[in-house]
Image (cartoon, rainbow, N blue to C red; front, top):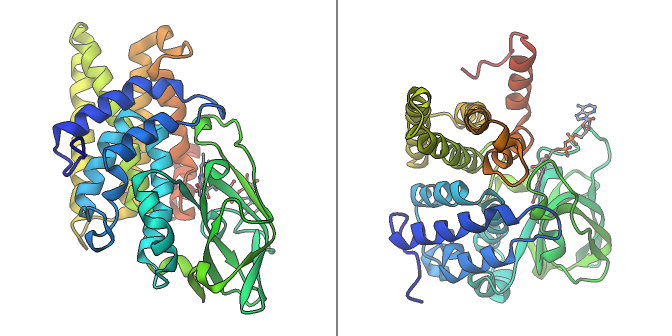
Amino acid sequence: MNNTITDPQSDLLDELCGQLSASAGQWRGISHWPAESLKRCGDAGVFRWFVPTQQGGFGWSDRDQTEGYLKLAEADLVTTFVITQYMGAVRRIAASENQRVAQNWLDRLMNGDQFATVGISHLTTSRRHLKEPALKAVEDNGGYRLVGMSPWVTGGAHADLLVVGATMEDGRQVLCAVPGDAEGVQAKPGCELVALSASCTDQVVFDQVRVDQSMILGGPMENVLSSGVGARPGGLQTSTLAVGLSMAAAKYLEREAAARDDLAEPASRLTAEINSLRDRLLSACDGPSAVDASQIRADANRLVLRSTQAALMAAKGAGFVQGHPAGRWCQQALFFLVWSCPQPISHAHLCELTNVPPALDLG
Ligand SMILES: Cc1cc2nc3c(=O)[nH]c(=O)nc-3n(C[C@H](O)[C@H](O)[C@H](O)COP(=O)(O)OP(=O)(O)OC[C@H]3O[C@@H](n4cnc5c(N)ncnc54)[C@H](O)[C@@H]3O)c2cc1C
């Protein structure tokens, strides 16, 4: 394992990112699942960054994980986004008080031999206005039956294991680890999206799927996702990927500026702004501070839209042709308007876009 990346400053990470960047344009539709790039990441030990050393991971600090994600996202947003969902599942498995799932699965998941993903948005940011829970957990003989569906699951059809949240009749929630081939699980192949279609994100239907106690990662309890670790809506991980994509756009602008004087000032201003947000993001990783995650998310959303569109303007019509990265980055930037975006932030953006004074000041 001499190509293992053991810290975010490693030349091997830059080498991996070069390879990811070279193939990033290939991951276009639902038939382009980025298996090859995921394998490269698994071989380089990327999936161990996020797991404590006692469980066989590298136990990277939040700051190091963020630096790693920034570089990966700059190189290839599709593969990096898939990794966030994969690691969302892995981290919840590793952090669970029930270690049976970890004992059975963690090693193969960290090696990249098996793939896991999460379906939890219906407990946080999706379908919250509807009366009926999307996915119900019905008590059954010491365990549960899952009935319904998880509306958004990245790579669900490729998953060996699905970490999903479900709601009981009394409102308490459970978090379960369900094998992708369990009886009654039906993962749809992926929707064609505005961007990131190759993430093969789609519904997973659960038709009376039996879950026993050994598969319960958390709950039953209220707000099961607030216990343990993993990606939280509005957390720093979404902002990290937005800043990573902004860095790709700014570097493109810098390269163009080398031969075009009129681009020099816009490129250097954009780079300075991104560096400043990157510094705030990294400071926020170092623990409780004055830096507010919502503020960073709002700023990252604005920055990713502006920087990718600046890259497109510099690329002109050539950038609007399918296959040019500037056009791809613009489409991908739209994703941050909808991905795990907490209601107060999305409302503040909406007010900004429609010129309505916002109730919540996000700066
Ligand atoms: C590419 C992609 C990949 C994703 N991957 C994952 C994943 O792997 N795991 C995961 O858990 N999640 C994932 N998500 C989910 C994501 O984090 C958000 O939860 C999701 O984008 C929220 O959108 P929604 O359409 O479900 O929201 P909803 O709030 O359900 O809105 C849907 C529609 O309902 C209507 N509506 C909304 N609010 C109201 C209201 N208050 N009153 C009346 N009508 C209303 C509107 O017409 C709206 O268009 C993914 C999302 C995307 C786009």
